[in-house]
Length: 220
Image (tube, rainbow, N blue to C red):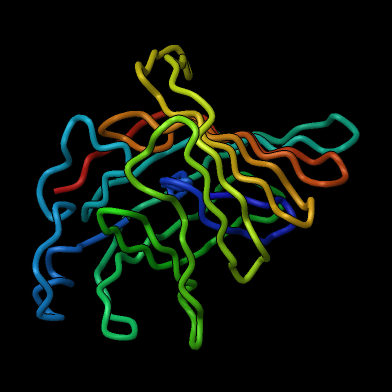
């Protein structure tokens, strides 16, 4: 989940995922819609880089840096809450909010997961579905997607071990999303069994948002 200090947002993840870049009850949604259950309805596999299960929650240190270099540290939350149907498809409702920022965010969005991609939908009438992430993750993979915030171009940069808040997460995928209009560049790192553990977004004009995982509660 990309968090804009000016109050706008877009999914990445796993967003915070995560997202949020980073998500909710796909099993229930599939049953209600008459669709077959996807693998996301089962307990998250240890090698699943984008788990999508009811009840999972990420809590992150959320730091805003101004173009002048000052910073404000808050807390970011992302939680999977409920399933819903949109246009005959089952989605997870993902609730993202912040605490301790000058202007806190409180956002709901919809996510669904298939074998080849994770899809994002704003939780509002007439929203258009967009690709959030192409699956399975592989170094060198690229994609482009049109969203309500413009065209986004994504790349899986590399796999690496990453230490965040004193904990090392092995075999993380480093993913980069760039807005085609130059509005921002986001680098984020997804860990197996968790999703996004770090996100670093730099906006045009110099503002920056850094998200670093403090705790993760798996879903069921």
